[in-house]
Image 1 (cartoon, one colour):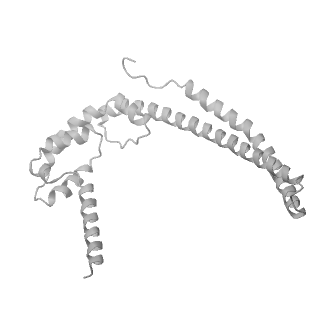
Image 2 (cartoon, one colour):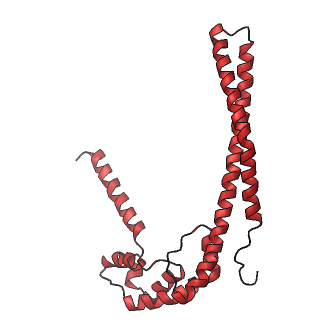
Length: 212
């Protein structure tokens, strides 16, 4: 086999190996010395879904290790009691995370209420940021169009321009003037939209963390 083909094969094998190791939830040493109750607790406390155990099962199967489902579930339930607190729900919603419905019924009500409040704050911030971005983009487009209009207007009266160039500049100038009129007409709507989003964000009163 040519050296170039050998190199390509080695690179492909190395890439595959790295991808497999990157996807595994546990490595060999962890599988051989695992405390499944602790693993369950860590998954629960991190808010991972119940299907996470399947990842551990696949990762450890290659080393002949099978999960202790009872110990894992016991630890996970304890971890969920740590995760399913209102403050964690609020933080999850505030950063735009998704709630997977993993909390026990006794804890879910307060958790979801706080999550919904945080999620609403996330949505308000996102809308305000998007409104500001649209307004900034419109101002930049106006600035660019005004600059181009000045250039085309100068070309119209230039002694160095040919008749064809002046004719084209006349058409372009007309198009730019229409574009500027449309953009400036939109600015008012964009400013009002931004002001409304900023007002809603500033006056939003949602869930308040204990002690705040």
